[in-house]
Amino acid sequence: MKKMKVSILALSVLVGGAVLASAANSKFVIANSSYISITNTPLIWSTVSQLPTSVFYSADATNLNTYASYVDTDGSGKIDGIGNVVRQWYLGGNLAGVSSLIGEVKGTITASKMNQPKTQITIKASGYTAPTTNLLVINGTAAVSGPATLNVKFSSSAAPLPYVTSYTNTIGTNVFITSYTNWHILGTYKGTFKSGIKGIPDQKIDEAADLFVNFNHPTETVLRVVKYGNKFGVIATSFDYASGSGNVNSKNQYTVNLKAGGSSSVQMKGQIGAFVYVADPIGTNAPVTNSIVSISTAEFKGKTHGQAINGSGAFWQYYGRPID
Image (cartoon, rainbow, N blue to C red; front, side, top):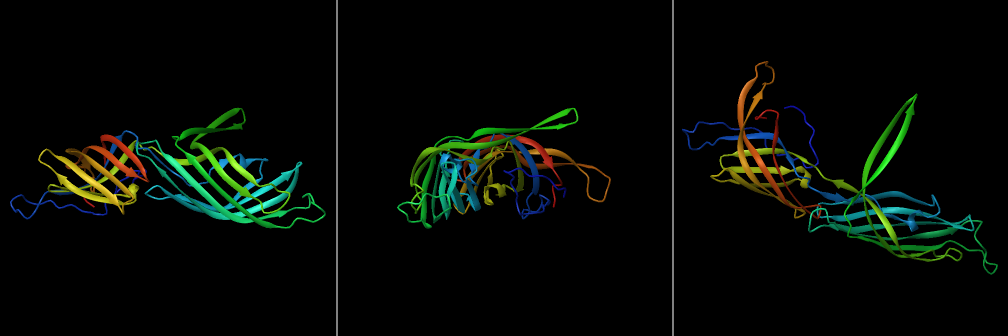
């Protein structure tokens, strides 16, 4: 079968083959497997894979770094991660100390209506603050390293917004401009930081924050369709390998409920139709006109990654051979 690119909402079925049998024997049914593509209204959801930023996290130019950071969003919208946050402190323009903390990242991103997420992320980290030679000596006693803690929470009810970055590259007399669009959610950071040593002040954090997200909004869905008799089934790789099966009624309408461990639950329903295609069997140069029964229309409604999605689409293109 031809290789093909599959969109983020690609639906794949791990069942190959087709059975074509005579109607004279009631033990057999007409059945086939196919790849088709439908164009649909955007199905929108976001996932989190990094920490939010704010004044606390970006003040004094390049005074903050995050090492060994890992943040991920699962199929239920649960956010987990861990990171080593390193903060440099300046007093009077001089480097006064460095804090290094390691801790857990936990949170959720959920939506009861499509593209209206509620996002909450907490960071609880502990470590130390070490002074430099520029740290002010208080009462004649040199400061020493002390235990530092960070406890902050990011909150937002805002929808993702586009953030466009452009780069200009000049080659000879030609000027090329390349633009990239990322997506971010605006919110607030609230919490506390305790330095653990004299000379570096503790801080109460209450400020605007910015969270860059992975914004998913596919307008094309590739489906692997398995229809046998009045039965119908798929496995959805983009919904955490959610799987489901259903029936096709006398009006050629189908319904399939896709589930994956309780994290993603998406219902597909629509119309089945017959399509004519031209196939060129492997090893031959003899195109054959044939037909396949597959999805004609599709409606999606449910949740993925903790967020509601809904949309509809119609048949656009058929891929490959009907038989694996």
